[in-house]
Amino acid sequence: MAFFLNKEKLYYYISGGLLTGWLLSCAFAAGETISHNYLHYQTSRLAVQSLQTHANKWVPVCLLLFCIGFAAYTGIYKALTAFLQRKTPGKSYNNFLPYSAGLILLACGIAGILFFLPDDTKQTQWIIAILCLVACSIYGDAAKRRAIKPTIVCLSLLILLIFLNGLVALDKRANRPDSPNIVLIIVDCLRADHLGFYGYQRPTSPAIDQLARSGLLFKRAYANAPWTKPSIASIFSSLYTTEHNVLNEANVLPSEINTLAEVLKNKGYKTFFFNGGNDFLEKDFNFHQGFDTCRYRSHQTTNADQVTGDFISEISQIDNDPFFAYIHYMDAHAPYTKTPINYLFTKNDNPNFEPGNRKSGFNKIRALLADNRLSTDDREHIIALYDAQIRFIDENIKAVTLFLNRSGLLENTILIITSDHGEEFWDHDNFEHGHSLYNELLHVPLIITGPDIPSRESTTPVQLIDIAPTIYHAVGIRKDTRLQGINLTDLPHNGPRDPQSPIFASGTLYGNEKYCTFEAGKKVIQNTDDGSNKWKLIGYTSPVEVEVYDIEKDPREHNNLIDAIPDTQQLLKPLQDLQNKSARFEEEVGTSMLDADLRDKLKALGYTQ
Image (cartoon, rainbow, N blue to C red; front, top):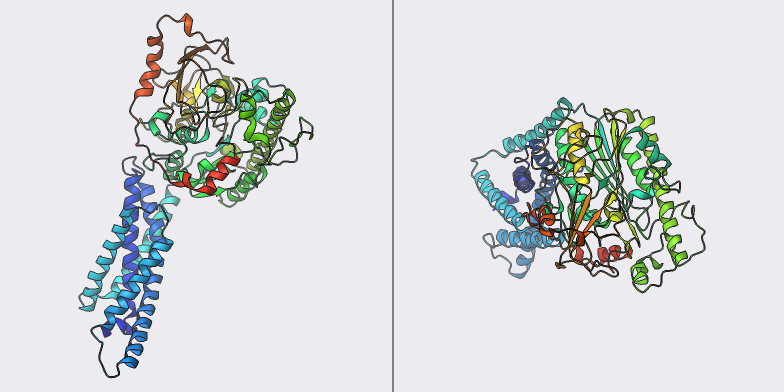
């Protein structure tokens, strides 16, 4: 036992720490590679970068811990020796003390792990850690018998770490993509018909209008879900909601989905996520996968100015590396944010609905509507506040384009502006979003500008799952056949959509589940009796099972044509084929929704009723 208490043998502990760090790194990187399907998707760079990230974390951590452990073990041994010698002078404890000190140190280590380990740590990580300790014990026994030289082990493991970092750096430099930057801007709750280029009378969007005139404008773009989580999951994955299965409040984006950020990161892009305050997109729900940098801000203390500032600050520091930036503005989401132009289109004379005030009446609007207690003046005031928020976001989008232009980046940047869903203002006797599949919630703006992007309007129906394939085409990435969207730049100016990729939406948050498809100018909505895992809906819900609308003649969907259609089953068949298709990914449910703090945040945003 004197072998382990000899200070000259410290390098045995150093080599043990390095070895443990490498074993943990390899194990965690292998687990991440398997769970994210990196090899299956041929994103091998992400697998190597995963190993690099874990090695840079765990090797120094384990080295430090082993050195601390060596000091602690020595201290405990000496303390026990002094204590026992005072109690029983002259008695030898050489066979007892080292093991006692080791057990005390092990108990402290386990207690520390239990205290500091994240709540969502999987049991497999415990198994990996135990296997690493076993391997280090075998190594320590071999080192004690002089079967292995620890100095050689130390140098080899340190050289391996340096080599891995050098390899990744050389690969990034040698394979730097000669492709345009990508900036994807999502304006939460932005309905298309409140923008100038869609015919709105108020001057809500002068900067966006200018971009629409200079780029590719889709007049008939639709979200694949009526609220944020399933809609963004569809954008990131190019999969229908029934495929990715991220449908309800507690669902987590599956790790094995190959996201837009992961694909671009594998190609060599630096990836950035700027979240202006949507709690459903936080790391708890796994939407951060593939992003190098995530900047999260609270909706209660943030407006678009801060989010734009984060974008400018980060992009200013990345030299000439190509980047993908996802910007999520939350200012148009009730209860809105405080801005200098909150009352641009109305007077500051309604204390019941004050922007940024969580105690005002925004969370009561559904109940007021249901009881017919929301006045005409209140309605006009709320819409005016919403329009001012759009104008404020428009000014920030202008600031983004000005920065890109001043930095010399704009001419080599593809800029995409859209929304995750729209917003209802009592179009069908309700408010906000998440509860229906009518056009006020699904019809969203979609503008694409940048190199090789034509300047034109398109009336061909498109959907948000088309965004990822369009980006992949623009940067030279071969489309994955598993994607359900299509490349928008291949579409005709107007005409029918590719029947292999029909427009489909589902995934309500409130009430019973609904499904809809668009085909040949007709929109079919099926209202099911499946209300499992849905929040209670206050206010209007459709009393009929099937609704059919001619969205060319009746874009506001007030004239249900179902009684005039003789063969309802034939009409529903395409919808039911999509609805009944087995989900590609198993449902994953997180525990974060049980967190009281997060539930309070969601209540402040008006989600819980």
